[in-house]
Each structure stands twice: as structure tokens, then as C-alpha cells.
Length: 322
Image (cartoon, rainbow, N blue to C red; front, side):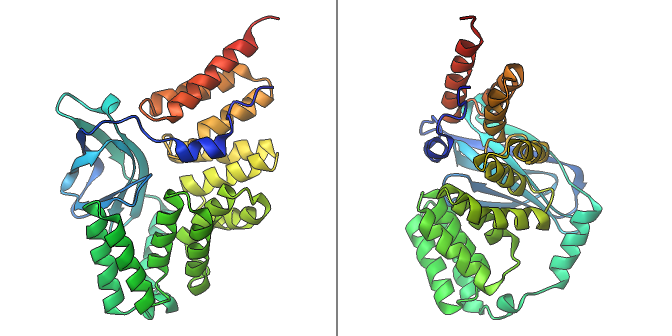
């Protein structure tokens, strides 16, 4: 069968967005309303990061470059709700506003995890000095202004002051990963885990860095651990699905990729493309077509849409009688 993914690992790293200089706004509503909360967006392809308060049932971000963002709404009682949002022209109104509705996740597991986080401070975190924390806070302001070099310099200063600063190491790894420097990213995620072995973020991120280096056997243990730590997390499920995909275990891959879609249908890892490839290998052409069409609906302005259209073309060719 035709490989619908089309050299997926290489292409996804290059899959940017077809955008101009125009900036857009993201206007969100949450349900049920929050008395107090915070909304955070971080760009999928750059270290851009901004947070704003949630006022009753709403929040807004202005002056955003078109692209894919991870949106996180933090509820002080129940924990976080995370979604991928496409802030691109296809989803914007005439005023350049992209509107999203966020149904807050309020599960017993989420609340239990939130309470554990509030009541537990790691030894590594206790060692982090105020100066290091201040440097990290200043780095976020630099990233929000588009000053990547200044933000990175402040994060490096933070880990120099406090080498056990897990969050700063993880952020440095994430920046390297987004730039395609996977070996550097791996090193920094390992630094984070050296000081806090059960930290979820560097655990799942290290699994991704190893996948990107085609080290599938090494990646599997980290992706299994990350998924066990947060079974409902879209990235953890998607990466575990990818890991099994690359190891040729397609039924297991399908299971976790479907769970990723359930958690976040528009997730930036594009689980639909992997599912389309699996269905194509199994001769399930209608299922493959559905996944590719879903990709186009969810990511119409992304370069991933080019991949999906080419895969659909090949699918149509494969469907023609000899």
C-alpha cells in the first residue's frame, strides 16, 4: 500500500503556516464561568508565550501572528484544560478575531492531581533561588515581545544560578526542540529529569525528542511512563501512538492515536495523519480518507494541509480500477 504519511517525521518539522504579516486576535469563552483563572497561550513553532486573566467567562489575546497555539486555561480548583487552537485566517471573522469555546475539564482525577501539586514541593524546586525564578519570569516577558535570544539568555542565567531548576531546563529543551535541535533538546530534558525524575513535562518531551531522532526503542520507555502519569493527556497519547507506529505495532498505535484525538481533536501532532497511514496499510481506504479530510478541516492554513491533499490524491489513484 501507499504510505499516506509521506515521510512524516521530516515533513512535520517543516510544516509551517502559510501566513502574511497580518496579526489576529483570539477571543475565548469558558464554561462553566470562573471567578478567577488564567489563560495561557504558547506558540507551537516558537517560544512565544503570553498569559492573561480569565474574567468570569472570557479572555482575549491581541496582536497574534497567525499560527498554531497551545491554549491552557488554569482553574485554581480543578486544574488545567489544554487545547490546540488554530489562529489563522480561515477561522477569523472580518475583524480578525478567532473565537473559541472551552468546556473546562472538571474530573476527579484532575482535581486530585491539582491538590497533589499544591501540596507537594519537590526537593529540586525547594533549591531554586528567588533570583533564578525572577530570571525565568523576565524571560517570559522577552519571549512575549519576540526577543528569543534575550529570553534564552535569561533562562540560561536561571539554570546557572540554580542548576536544579527543572522548569527552566524543560523550557530550554522545548526551545531547542522547536528549532529542530533535537540532540540539544534531549540533553536539556535529561537535565530536568536528573533533578526531578518524575516531572511529567520533561518526561513526555524527552520521549518526543528521542522519536525525532528515530530512537524508537529508547523513546518507548519515556512515552509509556508519560502516558501512565497523565492518561488523558493528548501529547502523551499521541507520542505513544507514534512510537508504536514506528515500531510497526499498528493496532496499539491506533488505540493511543484515537485517545489523543478524543482529548484534543486538533492537536498539533496531527494524529489523523498517522491513523490515515495505518488505515491505508490495512486497505481501509474510506477510513483513511476520513482522517485526511478531517486534517484539512482542522488545519486548512497549515503546510500539513499540503501533505493531506497529496495523500488524498494518492488515495484516489489507489482507488481507481487497474
